Image 1 (spheres, rainbow, N blue to C red):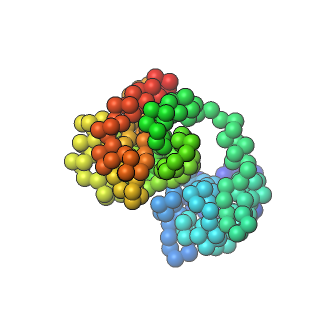
Image 2: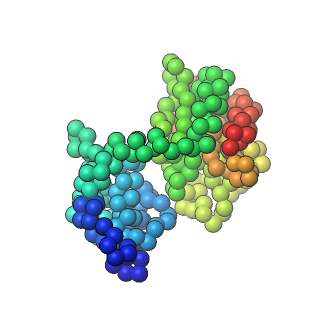
Image 3: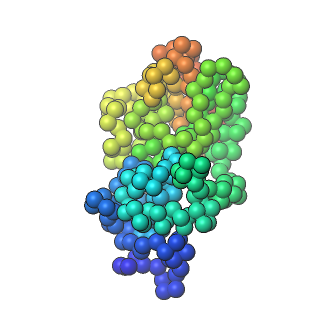
Length: 271
């Protein structure tokens, strides 16, 4: 361990004897830096074993994964990834399904149940009303590195719809939600996510106050999104309405932007 090693007596063996690495500079098989994967956040704690365990946890949370896929997503050697995954399984933070794929475990749900998120709590009151007005699927997204994560959703009870489950991680290079989150992001932190959006397009989003898309994220799906601000006026999320292009049209903002902006304001008043 280097300068960032844990204090004497710290129990690093509780995660199944995982290697003690050197944080973000640790290298996996083939020379890939741990944390270089798009599945990882841009920051590390400097505590190697913790960063590696979190990398494995996030890789499995993004999509159920085999051991080989965990290695590919994290850049970790096979033996290290296996030890960490097994250790996380002992603590029920990961589990294996009937196909042998690693996925989030029950302890994560138990821990999440004890937390309170003002944005998600507000969404539980606001999103159902927007769904009733539009008759379409409604989502709330937060940015997490090169992805946006659905943190709340409300679906119409029947009919053809665009279902995005809570917890889904979508790329930041397509869709109206991505445009909104990028439009109010500092220029220096937009790359590499902005490859599909020009500065002019993002400036247009800021000028209008909302974004729309048709067939960008998924063929046949249209959406319109608006920024959600906190009490200081900072953009912390994007609220979206999405559905089939046949119903939403190729310019869904003309129909739903006003209602969407009203819902965004309602969320802000509750934060």
